[in-house]
Length: 210
Image 1 (cartoon, rainbow, N blue to C red):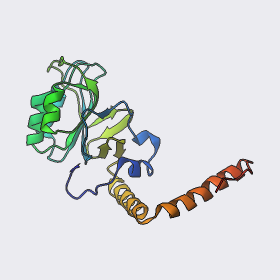
Image 2 (image 1 turned 60 degrees about the horizontal axis):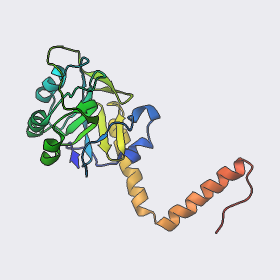
Image 3 (image 1 turned 90 degrees about the horizontal axis):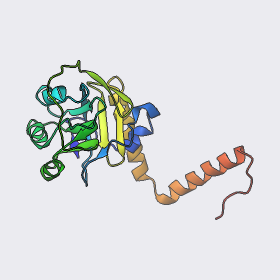
Image 4 (image 1 turned 180 degrees about the vertical axis):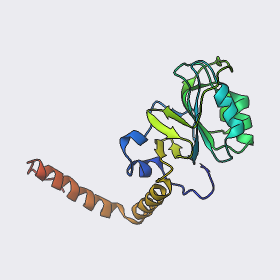
């Protein structure tokens, strides 16, 4: 796991149970290598002009250590980052990238173990010409603001708003502790009761097999 200090290690699934659907990113943004460590950290939101990566490259020098750079690439396949950008980001202590778009040099990125979630890879990069205001972006269908907290792994990517992040992460941590303390027999018994209640409410009286 790549985790910022003072943030609990909770899974995206636990956090997703506590937030609305619009806080969960499109599954098309996925880990680009495996096994991908979990990434947890404050977002640094970036918007790039279509076909340009200037603001992404600026972000690796502007974001604080532990940050997750979250990028709207402008809707084109041109790569917003490559191996050297990832290497510098890693050296500067950034937790990872989440890119609604593409990167390149995947073999290098995999070998250095830098976490990148993106839609894919593309061998050609964009230009470095256009300044775009940063601080907020729509990435994978989720509105992300700098300072929100991102939790990402192979299960998906969830964003907690800065104003509720501490509360939500603590609740997710408590949920995981409760789940870990429950046996499978206890879980199955509670699950059966819930399913039977739902079936009965819908008029299905057939019950469940033992």
